[in-house]
Structure formats: structure tokens, C-alpha cells
Image 1: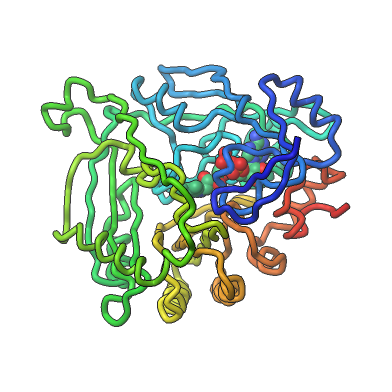
Image 2: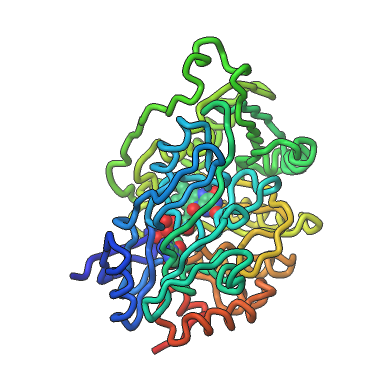
Amino acid sequence: MKKKIANWGNYPVIESDEKAFSFTEDIQDYARQHEHFIARGNGRCYGDASLAPATLSTLKYDKIISFDENNGLFECQSGLTLDRILEVIVPKGWFLPVTPGTKFISVGGAVASDVHGKNHHIDGSFSSHILEMDIIGPAGEIITCSANEKKDLFWATCGGMGLTGIISRVKFDLKKIESSYIKQKQVKAKNLEEVIRLFDDYKDYTYSVAWIDCLKKGDKFGRSILILGEHAKKEELPENKKSNPLKLPAKKQIKFPFNLPSFVLNTFTVKVFNFLYYGKNFKREINNIVSYEPFFYPLDAILHWNRGYGKKGFIQYQFVIPLENKEGLIDILKKISDKGLGSFLAVLKVFGKQDDLISFPKEGYTLALDFPVRKGLFEFLDELDEIVLKNGGRLYMSKDARMKPVILINSYERLPEFLSIVKKYNPDSKFKSLQSERLCLTKSN
Ligand SMILES: Cc1cc2nc3c(=O)[nH]c(=O)nc-3n(C[C@H](O)[C@H](O)[C@H](O)COP(=O)(O)OP(=O)(O)OC[C@H]3O[C@@H](n4cnc5c(N)ncnc54)[C@H](O)[C@@H]3O)c2cc1C
């Protein structure tokens, strides 16, 4: 039966015939029998990457296959979500090697978007930690691949947005931890120039991210809070936490009750939010020990926070621009500030070196901004795309719902190679999404 589905940005919303299975054989049968569909995890990509008239949800396909507690190796079915993995591995002294800003994503989604975290400059993206994985192809066949075996399939699947097949099993390594706490440092920067300098000063920190106020002008343009972190060692914990250093955080969540009318989120409310947020951090530097939950997943505490953007939904615009072209970053922030198009969320990170086939990260500054869908937005984002392109940057497909094919073609240098591998493993475009059609990555009917 068809039902309405959307991803995290609630744009677009479509009708889809969604099926979910718990057994590998059923997924293989589905793949054999269906002409066109896309695999779907937890719908946390923002745009249209996991939307199609027919979708295969992996959320029931969520078993742990093995967990080697001595060597930190984890193997599971692709529908298992990161929040459930953390509940198993943290009490045993292990953590995810790379985690995005939400734990509510599936392992299949982590691979297909090749997700990055606050530690990209040190640990790379998720694909750097995969030992091997299985992909179900169009005829229901299972192909095992890794960085050494069927390399072409492996690299086209990492960041390949589900176009090479259904990721069914993934084996990856974990990070050893002594505690479930993070030694956090927050540093206030008075403007963009200062935060960029601070990123460099603190580049040896494993985790770093900055929240930026996009609406300030003049010498406060780009004022930010840089948040840095390291996994706390047992001896660094306060006395009251030492007896249970690997304690899981309490599950505290509040629900966003309904879609806010879109006028609620105007420049004024964003200014108030930014004032409260930056005002809260009144000292220039704060050092404390926090649980991993608020450090990595501050937004997960508010279930359905995406409803705050109203019924029309929103676009998360994330780009990366090479370090040497930071002027491009300034141009974009200036345009946003001039237009008064506020973004509650403006998150800046620095990526380290990466030169994969189709993965988003490459060395540079990456900025993510949220914009509610409204008249004139897409034209405005087209203008930003041109600045990104002119500065040698690219957009993150996992957040995208509106980019034009020409932007993708001119920004992902190895796109032709990727497309030839997709053609080899998905010759009839069985695996296709609204996004792959919009970006001309798959054959139209
Ligand atoms: C609050 C929030 C914060 C975020 N922060 C970050 C961040 O810091 N870094 C980052 O990189 N991303 C971030 N993201 C994006 C998110 O991590 C990715 O979009 C991720 O891919 C979502 O996974 P999912 O399980 O929800 O998959 P979906 O959203 O359902 O699908 C995403 C893509 O994966 C494909 N896919 C899913 N499962 C499979 C499978 N089994 N086989 C083949 N293809 C599959 C889909 O076809 C689609 O192309 C964030 C998202 C949110 C909502």
C-alpha cells in the first residue's frame, strides 16, 4: 500500500509503496522482482536521496551479526541504527569511529552517504573504517566487497547514495574509550576570522565544530562558538563518575508537538535564538566534562525538531570549500547576512584530506545551514551554488533536494568514473531515487 513519505527536511513529500523485510532471502526476492526502487534507512538524509515511488526500508533488517569486544570489530545488518549500536558498545569500552550529528541513522545510510563527523580531520569518514560489506545486486546476488576486494564496487558504494545496490551487511572497526564522557572546551570567537584561526590553533583536538551566528554584521560578522572535545580518560572524571565510567546517558527527550507555521521562523526569531545561544556562553572559554550525548547529538534531545520549520519543510544547504579559498565562505555568509535569511543552524567544520570516488568530504571548510522552503529560496541557493563552484567546492548529496545536474557534474571530479561503475553493477537503473533522476545519475524510464 502507498503511503506518504519524506526525509528530514520534509521536502519533498511523496507517495511511495514501501516494503520492509527481516530476512536476507526476502530482500533478494524483492530485488529480483522489482523493476525500480531505492533502499531506505531511517530517512535522516534531508532531501530526496531515499525517496522513490517504490522503496525498500531496511529498518526491520537490523540484527547484530558479531561484536568482537577484544579487538573492537562490529558486524551487523544494514538497518541497525547507531543509537542501538552505542547502547551495546559503550558499556564495553568502545565508541563509533565516526558519527554524524544524529544517532538516528542506519548503518546502510552511514555507508551510502559516507558520513563524516566532528573528527574528519583526524579519522576520515565512515568508509575509512569499513573492513568489508555485502551488497545485494539487481538479480538478488550477494557481492562481498572491501578496499581490497571488488574495489570498484566498494568505492562507488561509499557515498554512492544507494545506486550500486542494497547494502546488506557491514563490518567496521570501533574506537577504544575509557569512559562515556567527553572533555569539552568551548571557546567564543568574536568573528569569522577568529574562529578560522582557532580551528587551526586547536587542530590537534580529535573533535571540533563551530556554531556560527549568520546574522551579525560589521566586526561581529561570523561570531561563533568553537566546541572541541576528547574522550575523557577514567582518571580525568570527577569522583562521582569514576565508579561507573562507561555509564550510558539517561534517555531524555522532548517532542516537538506539531508543525510550526512558517512565519514563526523569521529573522527576528533567529536573532533571538542566536542572542540567547551566544549570550549563554558568557565566558570566553569554558572547560567541562559532559556525557557523549549532548556533545555529539545536541539536537536528538528534541524529537521531530524538523517540524519547527513548518509544513513546507526546509533545505539543509551543506557545502565544502577548499582551505585556500576561504574568501568563498565569507562571500556566502555575507550574502546570507545581507539577505537577512537567517539559519538557526549554521555549523562549520574543517575536513581533512580525502580523495575518494564520490564521497562528499575533501580538505576544506564545510558549512551547513538550514533554510525554510519559501518563495525565492531556490533561486537564492542557485546563486550560492555558483559561488561554491567558482571556489572549487561541492555540495553534500545527502542533504540535497534541489541542486541542478550541472553543479554536480562540475564539482565532483570523479563523477564519470562513478557513473561507469554504477552502470556496471546497476545496468538497468533498478536502483534509482528521485535524486538520481533529478541529477541524471540513472536512466529515466
Ligand atoms: C540532525 C542531523 C544531523 C546530521 N549530521 C550529519 C553529519 O554530521 N555528518 C553527515 O555526514 N551526515 C549528517 N546527517 C545526514 C545523515 O547522517 C545521512 O543522511 C545518513 O545517510 C542518513 O541515514 P539514514 O539511515 O537515515 O538513511 P536515508 O536517509 O534513509 O538514506 C540516505 C541514503 O542512503 C541510502 N541507503 C540507506 N540505506 C541503504 C542500504 N541499506 N543500501 C543502500 N543504500 C542505502 C539511501 O538510498 C539514500 O541514498 C545528519 C542528519 C540529521 C537529520
